[in-house]
Image (cartoon, rainbow, N blue to C red; front, side, top):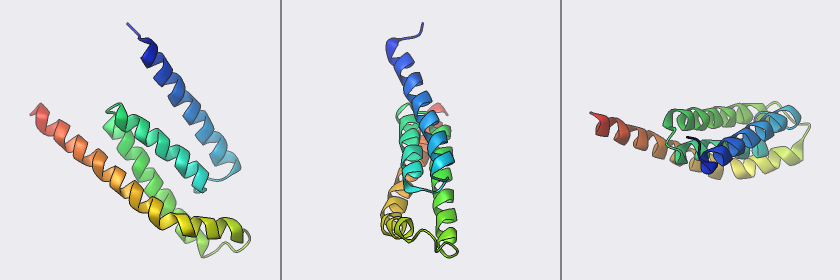
Length: 115
């Protein structure tokens, strides 16, 4: 039996996936707004105890941060976006790493409980 909450969660996940695809298309994969949408999806999966999906998304966010950092050295056309990303990056990167650590810890705990 499918509950109303499950249907709402599935719809929310679909909406975020659609929003992510549009942001990637129009803003780029490493744009701060795209990364924010990806982070919301990771948190959503973490809350649903879908730890593998949450971990995958957090690792993707970290990878995209790395790409953005590498891109900064080559991109001088969009200085405003570059300054915004440089200002936000250290704080967001630390937050993402902390969230990934929580997912890994939860995954470890659930694995230990199953044994």
